[in-house]
Image (tube, rainbow, N blue to C red):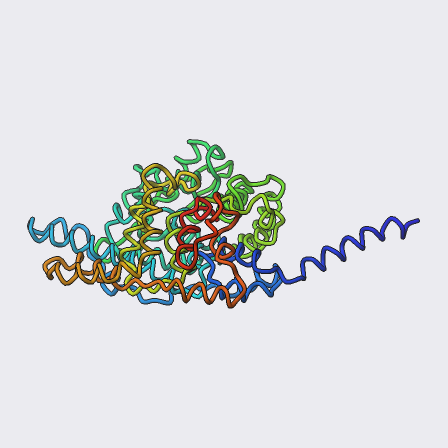
Length: 480
């Protein structure tokens, strides 16, 4: 009798294990690669299709990086004190400002290039995720070097330990400038960082009081930067070392102690896990599934890999109802299209500027809350621009000669314009070669390009590049 009750459970478990260990196939491989990176190349899909889900996830997590594979622009590593620029005569000041704008454009182009070149797209997706979580903007920071160093910091900790990342970002010079921590001192604490670290970085809205913010702001006094170098400086003489009460705890807390208090709250793990869920799974987390992931995340001491592995192996991640449920961000659309179609790009600058036009200007989120994402990515202005981008890529074989002619006629009086024209002229997409590769690997174009069925049937009379264009212009191409 006892065996009769247990046997069905054992048979179900064996069947489940067998299903889990089976190769996941091309469709699951594409889903995993698309969600964890930017697009999915046919060859990558083929490589992952023979793995089971657990093997595939572990392979992705083993391959993450802590450093970029491409070199930063040299000028982006030079620090120019903003007050020195302000002190220049008017004409020199305007020239210096133009230089900073140009260097900022170079930095944006560099990151797009890194996204395209990185052997670990997951690393770059997580770096972008943290950029939109720990928001800073070059428009206020006014230093390409500080933004570049923050980008490197986010990449270093992208899949490391969230507690270590939180402590590091809190003392990051770009963050200190962006949230005005350098102006905070004993007797006149600035509340910006204290408020945002609770509302946007850890606990979430409604899980703290105004009293908590005011007391925490006192703890963060003394965290500053050196104006001439942009480096972090601890200034004990302006720190408020008095007794504070934060989240019900009382002591002579400094900034690090307050961060530890925030990390001790279960709400922090729930908040971060929720954001990861919305990035990788679906717009609306499932309460029970989210609670399990948050619990594992917190129990691990905030290891990001643990949370992400749990998320990527969850039922919800693979569920049919959650596929094609996320709207592509401009980075997903632009970088994902370039990677999937293996478009040759010598200079990524036009694509960095395309991201700005589509609403996702790298190193310049719109406000401290970052880009809202989701359906907000698509509106009456951005949808035509998205279609125009696809049209240009699909017609890049014709674009090259046109751009080269424009370069010949333009003259050399505007270096940035010349660079843009040369960059566009260098873009190459060989549709026939791509289709031949997909066919050789056994993939129909639709299976590579779309997360689900097309919104409209593809005209059966189309062939070659025309099929790719029709698929890329279908509304389903805007989803992942």
